[in-house]
Image 1 (cartoon, rainbow, N blue to C red):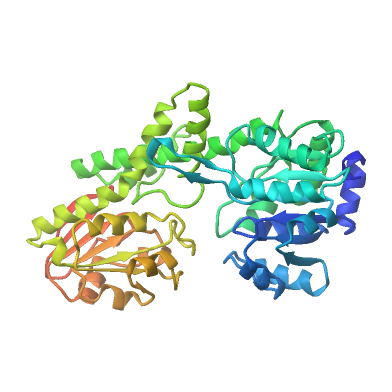
Image 2: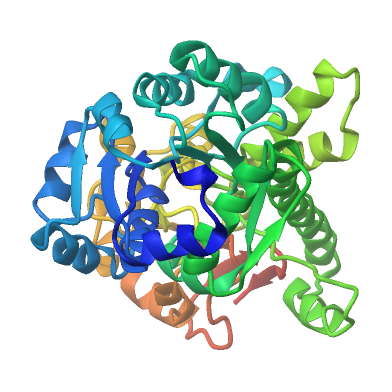
Length: 465
């Protein structure tokens, strides 16, 4: 009967281990979230339709490469406070709090992309079948504004026969994390945003998250407000990256180093220029603008800036390949006859996640030129299903990856690549001339030995050494 308790009693039950939390979706957010609730005192049931993930978790191993989580899972599994299952209905029956982190993806093409609620609805139906009076349901998946009230709430009420706020609590509370540091972000980095369907729902969720989030809780007026807030964060970044990509194009044409400009400009407190690059990957920033545009279309509104920013960022990989083709012509090379080595598969530096990576688009555009050979290197990813399907080798030894390559494209800003100089690349490739397209402006371009290197940085301009 959780939602009928006082805030102090809710906190006491969490800390004392009297609460059971079921988390639906054991992915990059769900597993670290389970760890945070375990460390706060709860018993946790991890729910996922993927039997392999469930098997790994029940062996004390994390299916996602997030720092620190395997140790937490292993410990709490050993003392009987954690287990994983594919049975979402049973997990709902056994738990007091149900948290949903399953992804809402996109379907369709171009500007008409729309959200696909299939996985979310399946999880909500399972929860509803086991929902009890007094339980609390928390949606943490990133969703279009209005989803909690227009999609989730009707299903929970219809299937369970219970009423939101009267019989059970319902809250939207977005995850606010970055991969590679998710557990830290949940517990330490940011305030938790909470929007409930009523006072009991909000009060209960606030009390629980005040135990977990060291930076406290921000209560907003509704689930829709909280949903909007989450997407606004991502759209802001997408628009800012698009601006950086556009300004980098001009800087390149002027022979100006955009990163020098960026550092100077960001010394002004009202300026926050982002970094340009080969594109925007992951399952967050490229998706959120389409959620917003989908909702806007239903209301007869066009989000012109949001749409344009998405178009600019989706064309960024093509821009990089166009630069490679242009440099090859200057060097007297034909790109289709070259070996091309792409440095980086992860969508962001120093993580092992390739979902929606711009590198896939680089390969797509290279194949339009029938390039002789393409190889990808990444220091953190050892196997990738999509590259395997495409027949593109993923090489862990960077020396082997670049050997014999006449074109080098830097796609990811891994720290490893920041230590690489043009001199080292020329030595390792053992070919002249060498074409280098630095899609992240991370390479050391200070010195080059005798020989020809044709270089362009995404925001640095052309240099022929």
